Length: 355
Image (cartoon, rainbow, N blue to C red; front, top):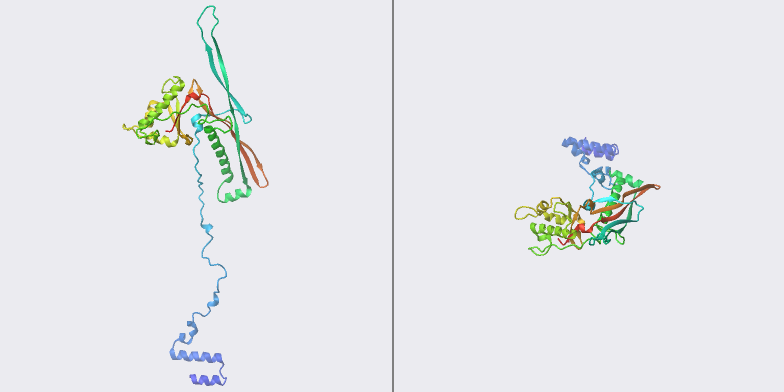
């Protein structure tokens, strides 16, 4: 059927509009042989695009970031300065936590002689006793943790209650160590560095490079300072130190201990020279010897006639009080007590300041 015939039939209403459209498409296919040309709507790519409407939710192409976050199970703890007072001065327990003061007896032999005579009653002997007083100081810390708090830290694989327990012991030990060096102010409680009975320190020798500090000192000059300190100890002891083989402790800061490794012209370190001449000497270090007044060095006779020269003393190293439960939490007090450092014979300690 030709196009003209189709138009006449459509105008008379004999062919419906939909049928006419189909006939026109068929005619078009017959003329061109291309179905696509007869269906131009197939080339309109904007048709039916409303099948994917505008997003209502926020655009997202991933997952929550925390799902890709890894927590390392190895806990890294912050370092603290070493606590060496007990190693340098020794440590012992004295008394109980109920003791507020202590008396340390010091006995000195007294007497005089006179010319002998069968009937003379001259001359006398005795003993003079002094009582050195010290006061104790007690201190405490409180740990507390909550039920929900523990659960939340548990998600991160952290045993929070255990960590708090470790911290409480560290806090007490740090203060105890500090009291061993400096005592407690406003009390008759002194440390190994600031005890008023200590003999004033001597000065180091002047170095070839200038000044008295070890910063520019040679290995020989460092050894000479240690030798001078031993000479000062001999002066204080009035010859009671028999020889250089006695047990002694040389205490100084870690900063200055490094300089003991300086090598002489003979390729021997200052430390090797010192230990070669003082075979029973032990070198100990503590940061507290870097004082505000300067770098301090102490030479301590460990003991004389079987009596220790020094010891750091405590009433309680750590007293753990009961764990108190609350509605959804717990708390615990821990306490300790200190006497500071007891120096029994101050003349057995020689000091040098400014190294």
